[in-house]
Image (cartoon, rainbow, N blue to C red; front, side):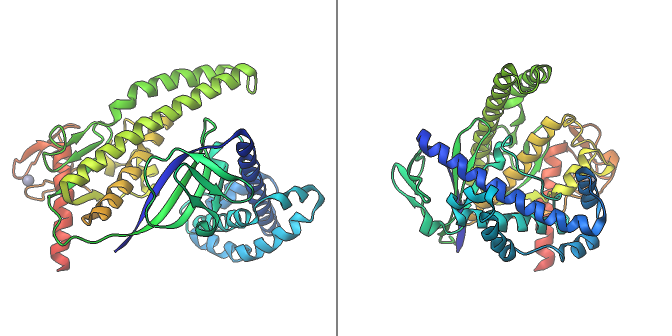
Length: 417
Ligand SMILES: [Zn+2]
C-alpha cells in the first residue's frame, strides 16, 4: 500500500537567499491578488456592487446553487496562466519576469482551487494576500522531483536560490510529490515536503481497540485505560500559562500606537510567544498520538467538520457545553486546530503502521449509555459524571463517551458485514 508521508524542515538561508525567497513570495502574492482582482471585476459586472466589503458579504452569503452558478463565469487556471504572460508585459509588472514562473502558475492553480472550495461552501471567498500576514508568504513547487534536490545539509532550490542550508532532523524517504516553502510569524522559512511511500501491510497488528473522546477540560480520553494516566491526556494545561501570558502581551500591544517602533517590538514579542505555544502544542500532539498509535490496532474518533464546529462553538443543545470553555477566540482557534490536527496525526500514523483509523457520527455520543444504549440528556449529571437513568451504569462522562464512540463503530462494522 502507498501512503503519504509529510516532512517539515527549518531552512537556514543566507541573507542573500532570504532576500530572494522574500522576493519570490512577494511575486506570488501579487499574482494571487491580480488573479483575484480579475475575478472580482467579472463579479462586479454581474452584481452591481462596487464596495469591496459589500461584495465579500454578498459572496459569502450566497447559497450553494448561486455559488455554483456564479463560478461558471470564472476563468480556469489555464486561462489565468495565459493572462500571466500578458501581465508580465505591463510596465508596472515587468519585474515579474525575473520571478519563477512555475511557482507563479502554481499560485494561480491554488487560487482557482480556493474558488472551488468557496463554491462548494467549504470556505469563504479568497481574500487579498498581504505581506503583513506571514502565512500569505508561501511558494509551492509544482514539479518538485525536477526542481528540488534534498542533500545531507542542503536543499537545492531552483531560480538561482541554489543550495540552502536546512535543519535535517530526519531522512526523507519515498517519492517526492509536493514541496512548499513558507514563512512563519517570527520570520523563519520552512519547507514542507510530501512523499509517497510504499509500506507493507502487516497481516497482524498487535494491540487493542480504543475509542477517543476529545474535549476541552480533558484533551483526549481513551475508552481503554492505557497510555498514561488511565487513558487521559490533559494536553491543554501544558500551554495554559503561556496563553495567559499571551493575553497580557496582546493587551499591551493593543495600547501601543499602530505601526510605531514600540508597537513593532511588542508585535514581535507576541509573535514569538505564539510560536512558542505552537511548538509546545506540536510537541505534545506528536508525543500523544504516537503513544496512542503504538498501543492500539484500531482507533475510532468522532467525525468533525469545520462548519459543524464553528456552529457548536456558539453553543447548541447538541454539544451541551463541550465548547463552553472556549469563550475567547484565541482559546477556540487553538483548540479547533488541535482537534483537527490530532485526528490527522492519528489517521496517518495508524496507516503508517497498518492499523485501522475510523470515525463515527458524533450525534449524542455524550448522552448515550455505553452499557444499554439508553440516550437521554439527564444521563449526564455534571460535566464529569455519567449515570444512566435506565440501567444505572455509572462512569466518568468522557470515558463513557469514548466507549460509545468505539461501540458505535463496531456496530456499524457488524451491520456492514
Ligand atoms: Zn444504561
